[in-house]
View: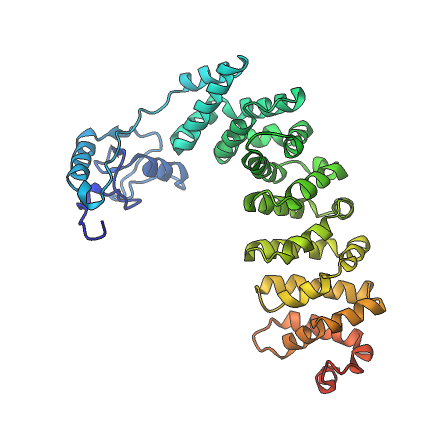
Length: 408
């Protein structure tokens, strides 16, 4: 396919991909429907035609270019032997009345409800135009109410589809944010999903975490402050400990980071045994972005005494810090040094100080001081840690004395 020259007028001027659903604007230029709709929707101020720069109102009629579409389909068929796939005939845009009928079917028990959910999910997954239409028809409210209904009745039929639909249309809907902003019942419904037994539980619980993260980002401060320890235990035990999926783990870490702003929630997260589970998760050497999230959360939890105590109880905690410093990213270095700094200042028992020496944490701090491209503020923090316990570490055969005395 790389050797085949695609006619220029078969390509969308915005996406530069072969046109699948070509539409012509009032300026006479043809675009891929989804590309030009997105352009008009996201344009700042008065939108213009991407090619001609002429005014192009957001409510401009987009006329299907059937002739060009048929030409492209014929060209694809002629070049099928060279690996060109035929462009399917695009479906007609859905109408609001269709979506309203499907929403009405959600109140019909069993088969009709399941069928409506599956149809709504397929429409939401198809394109942005469908998602916008669904939001305008009130699908967001219908899905929030449906998920809460599943929770109240203890039923899981359709829950998977409901979560997927809500996740797909979330960005298009301002209504969702208003619906969940002060809705404790909806948060309870999502945490219930994490613990209930359900078919295809990995996908369902992953989507529950994805939706929970989006929810936590928009709920009011008062609701965040009222979160109970059980909320955090469900996330720690059902997601972090069981390693449901990478997406679920990432969402769980983002949720915990988002709510870890105040002392009360921090204590609740520690009480949920999060520190131990975070260390165990990091010992499995996850991807870099997960490591950065783990270290960021650990640094916040170690700012309280209970968090530091739980951290030091894990036999591999300080060794883990030593291993990751200067090996992952500057963000990880920053958080690792922050943790060591907190321990050195507030929880530095004899055993902890000696453990830092044994596992190489002291050597890593010295490396940070010597390394030219290490951030100045990290060098300052490392110097402060070394200064605090230099009397203990000076007598160690593991560290060259001149290195410690060089930074008095």
